Image 1: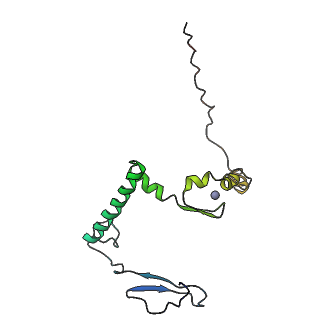
Image 2: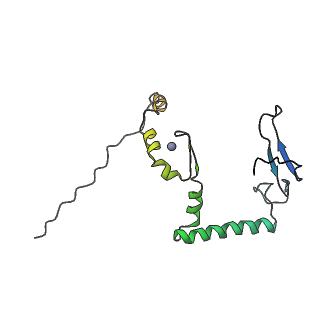
Image 3: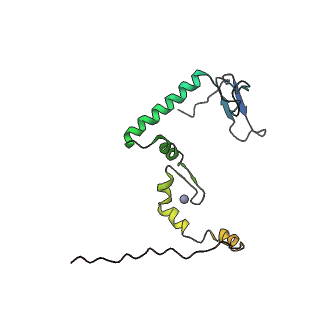
Amino acid sequence: GTQKARTGRLKKPFVKVEDMSQLYRPFYLQLTNMPFINYSIQKPSSPFDVDKPSSIQKQTQVKLRIQTDGNKRGGIPIQLQLKEKKKKGYCECCLQKYEDLESHLLSEQHRNFAQSNHYQVVDDIVSKLIFDFVEYERDMPKKKRIKYSI
Ligand SMILES: [Zn+2]
């Protein structure tokens, strides 16, 4: 169904960016409201922040959704959840997308890379630096005398 020719005109307002050679797919931005320089908003807020009640409502909706997720996870603080959501990404070592950073770091492919000699380029640069911190000996845990109970 997606092969069907999709023709027409973009709904206004929009921005369309296209390479002049027309070798690549154009990309679009379509918004109901284009950015507007808001001089009346308090500094240092972005002049593109909109202080309309509608945007506040949206934010509340997002928060509500996160809270619903939280119930499933058993009450993890919202801030932690937000951090977790950012853990999606792309690994430049494995050339692989991942859904969850922590579990990717534990994958066989990544651990193989992490323990390989692929970091030689980094080590070569590090070896040119001078170590001039005070290096203390490792703090040995004081051995507690074992008390024998008779
Ligand atoms: Zn990786």
